[in-house]
Image 1 (cartoon, rainbow over the protein chains, first blue to last red):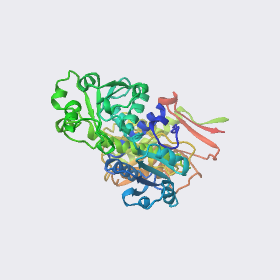
Image 2: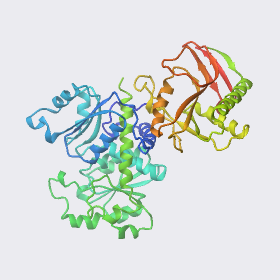
Image 3: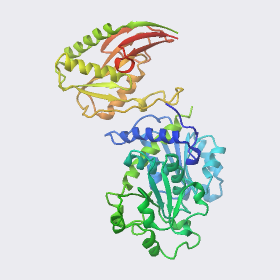
Length: 308
Length: 179
């Protein structure tokens, strides 16, 4: 079996398509494992993993922790709210202290773009980026792309539109890289103020009209409006955003094509998608959550295999 | 590299018939017995035995499952290469069943150790037996022995025992390969 070409998972841009296929094929096996009566395998029983969350997270943290426990790894958790970071310690010092406790893998979320890369250059452990600022969120992109593969059989040739706050979204950037590697066509759609300049240089289509975008696509990945990252006002009101860029049941029914709705969570019901849409048969939001555990098990397993 | 034929087509066939008969002697109608082929190489032997039991000995409804042990191996991170996972296909309950593990070659016994752990994920069997076509004597790392063996072979560590099946290599034969 081939190995990953990388020693850390810092972002999708460091991976090649063979890596993604290897992760997906491994995730297929783990998906079966987590659907058994006994959902655990002993592969990582001598591996210790630290989850360092310098930024709030609920589902990503739970999903990582569950994946680690399903692989029988020992897990320690750290979140910045209760940490000595508030006492002025640097990132490297904090992490080195944790590594002195013989940790093999670090899963880190951090508000600064490039934090995971920086860490990988300075500490001796495998690093998994669980989101670094508005930069990348590789495991989310992998599970999104994997969910499209699970639904359609393959990603190649599928038309995927990413709707919403592209400017502040690490999910969008990682998704663009992963989908393109797998051969999908990608479009981004949102208010002009929330679409980064020059994003078309990445080879994606840009559309500001939601209806046109939905008519074009097979899959719509609806992103959350990241109010916490917005330093200025990018659109007049949430109500206006919902009217222009929210997907409702009526809007879906008015389309000729049946599209699949995805959302990385947490959902703002009634803003980017209505409750009806979130709970409809066209939505694969909860499949994404299940696939997330399998994908994270695959990533951790494949990186751990490189610890000799 | 030299190779020696340990078993030819005819010998493999005779041995398979003997193993099938030994299974019948113990399990009679297989009503509470399931066969589990160990992935990847035990699956051919398991499928062949199932076919023989139903076609030649009229035992129908034999349950056959395939078990993958990749995630239960004890050499994860210790071996040079990453082992490729195969699918596990067990679509029946193991609870209180007589389980027969089937593999082509028994060498160190570590795969069987892993299989013993892996099968626990599917329930608590009444008992587990082991059937192997080739038993490499004096090579065991663990106290594991087969209940049904095709042929015992003395092979040193540099030597490799290769089992070919018609399905994959166009012939039924067993070779001893000296590197």
